Length: 614
Image (tube, helix red, strand yellow):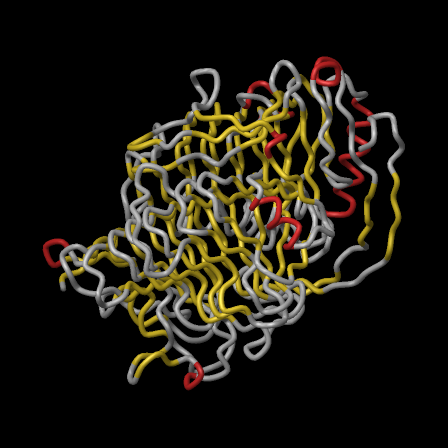
């Protein structure tokens, strides 16, 4: 740890990289120089320094106090952003933490950067000035603006408007914006995103955002629509009904616990707050002064730092510790094993676990109350059968009263280098909650190609009564999602099928069936329900098509609400939306077929042109 008065120590190396994205962007450009930052950790001041010990969170965590000189705070923030502004596949990871108090600062949030307030409520940390995410590609293109987050503070934005131009893997949690929030940059392309447990005093302008999920949020008004906007447990959702505008509104969130968060209390004690489980909720958790839940002193966590081995971490978990993973990349020769009930595993600054021997990165037992949050799981070059497994296959212990939950757990296969996995996330435990994930087989970067970054499935669900909010799954080579458990529910689904099948023979799931459906509910399932699904194609080779965006068994208990497709670029098509229902999505002319209900109510289906008789 270093105190605030310490100088910033920096070194730099020059680097080059390419950035491109199919539907998300067809731009190919050079990455700006990368600068590696070290020794940028601020000490505590005032009451916290006098009453509480300072945890050593490693060299890539900055802790600011309201007593720190604003110019010094700004200097350190700018130094971090200089590294992370263009570092889409870089190695640096950063967390910027603010003790309770008032700050006047401008915070640009770059790749692999997490900005966190350490108060009991967002209003305990108040930033006047600017907090913003900017488009990472030219022409205001935010479709590759990934892997960054804000959590737990309030902002009075200069000019009354905060810009948050983002796409996938960008958590926005426990925030209070004392003004307006804009989710794009001058209406350039954007492919987000996520808001939860947050209040925006003014207007949320989604603008050119292609899709968005808002869960348990409040605002004065929402403007904008594009392809697929979903609102769950939102007070005052926007007026209008699917399909025009394409709003899906669910009045109450059926079951959720909010993501655990760091807090420093009035005596300077560091702790992790684990919010309580809520049923049929709307709005935010913190209006009563704090989020209800239990607290765990930070002393009960093992604080992992880059260089720690899986064996070291597993020994600490076996000894009864929780786990806080500080920013960095963790090369794992064996899985991290989470075996005890109610264990919390929390990453900071997009802490990245990477298996190097073809194993899983992490295995969670079928034990109630396990929480995994704030992690990026990156596939290694040796193929892993699964990257993260939750529960034990075949076990059906009931965890309804204290479910396992995953919050902001993201997956990547390729992009930073060759990666390979059969399945990214497998959920075997009943009653599990998935609260925001992006499960991505890379379409650009290093190690990308049909025969290079191999990944069959993004998500396989074997457990019963599993609930997913904000499910983003893209580009895997077979089914993006395979749902085998009973009673599953998904609230918001966004998926691009793979860009790169070389021919139709390589992309055929069964005789007479072109491609692999994005969202597959297994034939034996009797009960499943999903709201707000968008499936997109960007085929790069001619004569490659997808028969069905979604495949489900035709049973009374299996229902899809509000599904749409679109074919982007200039090739191929998605022939049907759900099974054989829904018109073809074709690029010329471009159409956006929509199915309001499956099975259709009263024999009707919705398309771009409105209701059409079956």
